[in-house]
Figure (spheres, one colour):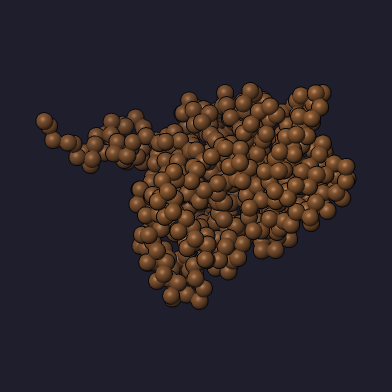
Length: 499
């Protein structure tokens, strides 16, 4: 039997065979293929359920319990001092791979998933870090397009735990829940190892825990009012915080922005000598048609046009996310600056056709149709309302809504009022959920008493909404939209057995 070939020899052979390709891309892709020979193909990107093994589930819950003793994601001390200290004692794992950093108010997770799908289609090994999760904490850290296993999540936590405790002992405040998870993600990516990390900001940008990377590509999805108590009361002020991810000499991919936000972001780009590509100028949507199961797009990237792109997601906002994601990946490969060409169009089409974004206009039941959407602020709610109206011909739509207490519930309900025949007000499992009576009082002011139903328990709310949608024969085309919070969507998804 012949001796197994040396992976280093395989790497050299693949590079030598890529004589007609750009040499930098050949080296990157060869490295990825060598790793894939050892690691196997990607496994897709489902939303994982709890582990079936009782002992494994117990171990995961113990980790979750330990993490829950730390500051939650809504309690922040605006500094990267502690996460920088953790990176230092871990050996700077975040510098072991190039990164694409994604910020903005809405669309971050969907855009990150699309970027990940494109990079994976071009045979790069990816790591993706997003938040919050829909159902299970392991969703937040993905490798090769799939959430890491519960076993790997636990192992990663145990690996970094001694270093976390070391930093805790040195600093004025312990590392927060989000800071520990961020450290785990960066360590897991370095350990894999990945060719590129796609990192979604938790909140803001400048002092967000993720902002210890020097990303070559900074992506800014649409900015609107959210977290105004922490980020600022205008979109310009919020853009100032989010512009902190723009690093010296980076490429900045800007989605369509309010004027004051765009001005702030462009000023930051000038200060950092960054290259800017703007949606509607350097890239964008050429055409868009509603199709069965999604939409058909022609996108203009930094290097040229890509036609016949099927995106299995609903809503114009997802088409805009796709344009941003494509430009980000082109920029990562140097297209539009160093290389005047396009990516392989068939590979781009294949990648987009496989994109999934759980909890974003996601159909989870038929007869009647039940849709889940994680819109949690007025800007997101308006986009969702437009997407539902465009993609579904409902004769009657019943809403199920529970929001978080720190959100603009009135603005969200006002955005949905034109499309909801009735709204069922409820609550979700998150401790920060808006009090059901307080939310109901706002809903009555927006919808009128006759159009509001109150069911404090989400299972009862879902049953009430489905009953309303089915109650009259003339409403055979009725549907239900569950929305208001990612926690509401996650709870409903579990109840409807999607997990």
